[in-house]
Image (cartoon, rainbow, N blue to C red; front, side, top):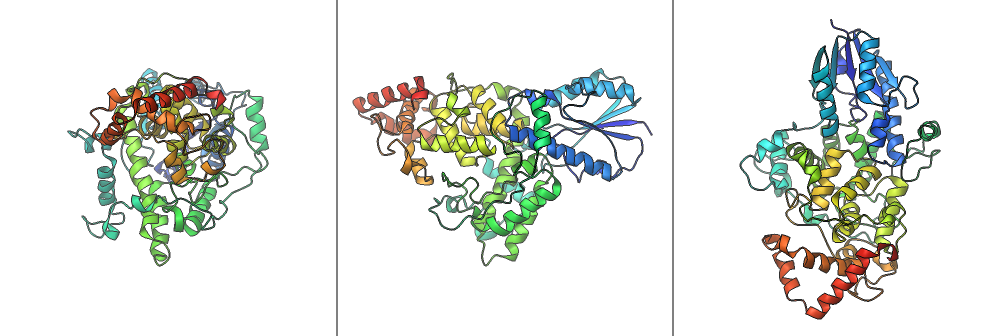
Length: 512
């Protein structure tokens, strides 16, 4: 048996991986907290803490199961802070004869490891991470020869393939594939939202090491009361809590927003899954199992909306990532060039929706998908911000943000920078949608019903200005026909006033 070094990356904390069935004494497992990973973008402090804590717990679990583990904390004296340098050092020091790794989910790491292996004079082997329900290339095969990449068809195929909520091999349970129309309720104070499953862990030591290392981060943290799951038992606890307490209203209010409610009925499972501490299939099976036992209380629309996010969107976005990278990260089809306003790092804005969505992100490293898409993302697109700027912010600020899922959602779904590969039309709106789905507008300094004037909601003029400035891009987009027709019918004077107001907002965001 060759003496083998096995690399485990920080988002490969899969307790069920077949690697760990191997009892060979010639296996050395390596994990490292590195400046290479903390510094490629400025991350939220809670994100860095969550990954370090989770990696340390995973390393301990491996050791408890008899594995030989080399673990470099951020301040370890032998830590070169660079993956290749660390690996070369260990291979030499431990007379390693074979190097193995699990396929990374980020393109930059995939390239780095491929190049590293090409330069090695010993045997190498790459393994699947055994996490996703599709391979890297499945989506490309599914859409081969098709002009559009409609997610719904892929989602239906996944339901059939894995026999999830199916009556037979053709018909879905409940008579419909999609209950999205039932999942758009505004939360008006009832039903009562249970407190999230929190942990209140003391992470002061880890935080101190991060600060002493000089790692630059964004956001806030309460080190004596850390609230995220960082071990498999933690993650299973959050999953059980969601099923038993939140699923009952998840679908109804999955798009709702409230200034005083951080999580509403959302699961808070994305970090647990994206770090691979939970497998998507076990999450889906647990939630469906609980629904089946409680169908008299929980409607199918609640569970289908949840399954669609994991079985549909999550797998679809990963497939898009591997199908379109590396060119995808340079896409800017709308030619947007503006900078992201400073208030994205401070929440210092009079726009109530923006203030709350950003402050929540800074305080908790979290915002749900509609806050990301229709508040912060909507504003960035309407103000024609360069997608590189938007990418960097989203990748840094959210605890669950890893490039494969962040860039496809941000550059594709949110910013329409890919020209319509992911979304068939841009997700933009005026203040009316925000008012319809949230409780932000009532206490705002701006009036959601006003289009122009000093106290008019900025989203209103920005929306019409965006359609006006980008009309050439959308003239052949059938899904934009109605909006383009409304734009054409606008009174010229009204349009000029809207454009003038929007330009003022774009040029002087600090005043709003």
